[in-house]
Figure 1 (spheres, rainbow, N blue to C red):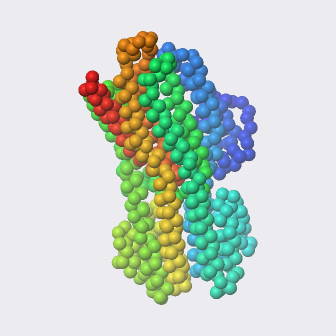
Figure 2: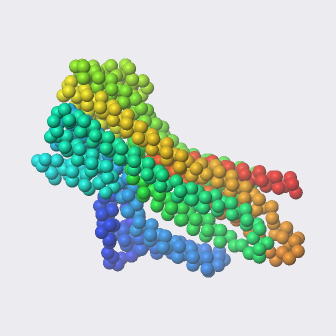
Figure 3: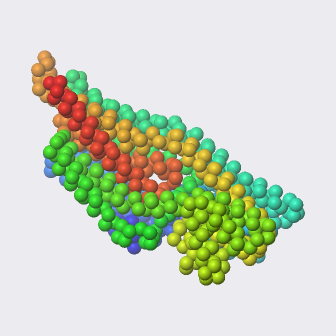
Length: 576
């Protein structure tokens, strides 16, 4: 039982009353294949509300005003209830978005199988069998229910998903039509089916990119830039007769603002039509270090070094929170760096697949065997892709295995390469090994299809980077420097400064150490909100990317924030 499932059941026990679940919640629970009922989530939400209300109560022991405690209790309770009740809907939306990113590959596999043999049933079966995501499983389920029917479940599958990806309906209709088209028209119809899905992907992502420009700019301005800039006005508040309380800033910067940013981030993410997630790496992959989580111990070492350094050289009041931020960042970097390195290797393997497929396809179309074509590709294709083909060719020579075994078998070249794209290529080459010369054109077409799909992905990511790069750069670099400068400047005006001014003897300023800690916590929260948002908009929900880049942001933001505050403190002392 996973930690999430355990938490849901524990929270549900805190509210043992009868509840009703909406149809939408039931559908979301079914889609994410959660090991609990929708009613359990409803009860868990109310149980989380009880916990959220209890968490702030210890503040009463620290002489915090009852009003602020009451606000914290209400905010925590309502936020916890809403978060738990909304989580299945968000998880379903994210999973659906990620699944739809496989649509061009799914249709592409069916089209290419049709080019080898004009049988829609075989094409649908091949497309479903060679995929492992929700979309492939859905197609497989429709195929099984519609065995023996003219369209093999393809059109019913398209109707189910067309609400989220309208181009799928037109592409599937063209694909189904191609089965009965004259031989001279079949190739053109299949090409149009593939073009329809690629054009639909491109247009949906272009519309999404254009629609988020204004919201992301507002998020940057009102969620990051303006709050950090307002800190500079804190010392001037007593001049207007306003006495400040540190809990006002805790409530605003560490609760209200982060919750608002999370809500805005989720609002943006659920509107992403499709995602092109990176390859998924299992933690038990043989290329990863054993007991990967033990590497997080480097975070404890880094945190200790930072704590001692900051406590010794100042500002000492930031030592604990900065040590926590840097330690957590180093721990995340230590754990996720090996996974990201393996991810880069997988991308390197995929980089020259189009060239390899084109070489193999041309040779097979000219009458060469697939085995000899693979050997030729091994000699001509560079880098990691060439090494994979060299490995496969060697397995074929030594063990006299099939093409599929040479790539995907026990000693296959792709057995430890978790690339859906590469595995689909191997499955098509295996079919070509059985079909011979007629499969050559299909392999060349697959090369063209992969090249087009790579162009669509690259074009989409370039456009999204232009929109989102400001968010993570601000959380990592710009925000900490602005926050550090404003906290440092706040130290210029002290209570003694106001007592020296006529008419302000009773004015009090906010203690700069408390203000600095609040801002440091706010910057840590920004790293956990803005960085995942930026990378999720570009790549979809991916834990490895989130963990690595959050770690990097935490380290840079805490160091820059501390250095900025310290330098301004030194400058103030020199001026004084």
